[in-house]
Image (tube, rainbow, N blue to C red; front, side, top):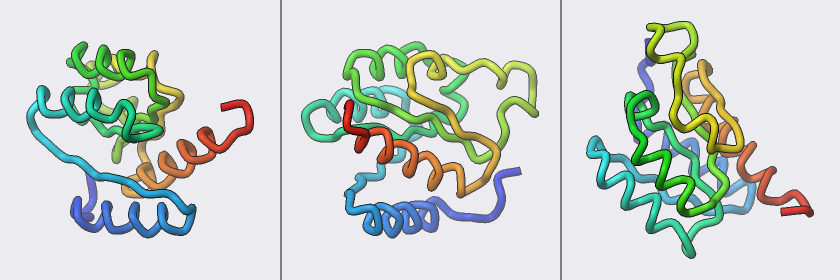
Length: 127
């Protein structure tokens, strides 16, 4: 379902893509909800946006949603798989209403498309 790409491979591709766009990324991964909340809150004043794959927390975490709202940074939600073609409960995202966009179902490319969309959004003259 998720393919055979490793997280290191995805992060390597993201770093290369970011470098081509002239931006820097700081990948963070944790299986602990509180650490993810802390990372989002710590982004304020350090980063201009958030690219997030919250995994199963997408469907369960009001805390991640509130953290994104609290920092008021543009965020893009990404998923390797198409969450809408899976179990019914995966069709609901607590994050979707508070992010600028959502990309799912394109494997590793979801991350690259999400980064491209986030950078484009941040570089719009009105932002």
